[in-house]
Image (tube, rainbow, N blue to C red; front, side):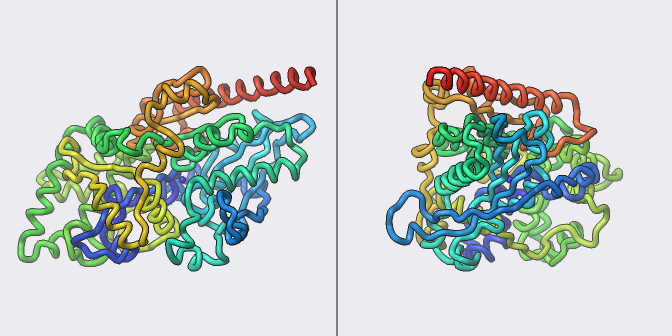
Length: 505
């Protein structure tokens, strides 16, 4: 599920983004799956985290000549591109001591965000005397095939090499290259990922157990495919988060959608809404406002991190509106409260800014990462079920190829996960925060003694792997300590097995 920029709106992209990105008309605009991201867009505005990001000085950047297609023997499959990886060896015990390697899997964004925001590796490098290795996902950041981003994203033929199986094969190749380069063949590797990257980490351990000793998969909704998880799981948790924070806030949000429709239906209704919500551009449709609010609520819930707790802040604004304020006025107070920049000249309907993540994640969700998130009648949102047939049609109309909604469960599994994984899998740690809407698609129960689930009642999306802060609550500190203890246990057992094997041979 890589928290870096902003969770894409209304469980999908904003209508205007869809129009720009997919050139679909309004009548057939499809829902697109929100990116999975470990770091909230406001991370860089947090002075507590800004003071902890001086680790850049310890990074060394390299590029590996990566194979374009790992699963084919056609001549074009042997084309290559430069894949970025970054190493921090400050605390590494070295190859002679067989000190471990902690490998972080980049996901749907440039690796730069992970280097400054993911704290589990630098925070614990000294505990493990570990080499830190960060690998960028193909088609993101500086790891672009075909020579340029424009060429790589040109059509389905060039985008066809852009998928999770190719990505984890890339990671395998880079890890083996680094181990050989550093003469660290006996150094155990722990792979770590967050959100979509957490999916990749868990799948890597299943597909490449000879390369990775274990995997930490933070907030990885590997069960949110093929209707294993109820479609409304995500929005049900968003609703629960707000209702637990404030019943009156929940009720106000619940009633606000019909109020927006009521005002929008007036002759000058869109102008009234534009003024009331201080939009950056005049609204052309009430759906733009609804999409913005949907995005604000889901982002607040997904990244409901201490000490600010954005859900509480939004509800504080809604409930704290002056006496006599109408429903939409209260909602706008919540919008202002959610702004970390204080009073602004405008809040809603800002000019579209299509990032490489927006474009890349659009392809990924229109090919294999089909996460069927829908909204039923039991949430604080308007009902909006996921329509797979419509989704497939719109993706095919734009890209020329249809999604494969069942491929993830075919290739990696997911159904009957306990029955299957307890028979062969080991050394995977699934961590989740139960306030994270994506936890509805996560592994929340232990599968075996070594495929374990660790969750916290008040945790949010990827909270355990972002940079530790002095204000972190005890339950979060203890969660991270437990994760370190489990991983140390894997490594200790590895060293014991290695000694036994060397005695025999």
